[in-house]
Length: 96
Image (cartoon, rainbow, N blue to C red; front, side, top):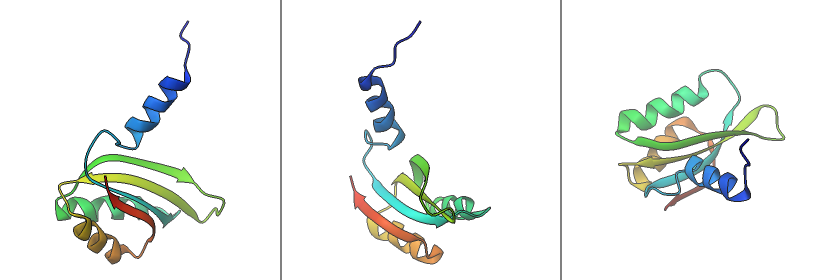
């Protein structure tokens, strides 16, 4: 029998959010429609970005979902430019 501790859950959250890696972390709202996440991934990848982490969370609004991801190999400005092509609502973007 395994016991899951608060420390285990904290480590899982740290890893899921890519906190152990340097890069650009973004939280944004995207429409909850087929293909939106794919569009995001494709635009970042085409620019040369590498996804360290990507987590989707539901929101109180059933028409959107929150996506938090961390990218390496792109500057903050490059990620901002990629996101401007998609017109997603950016909640937070920073270098970590």
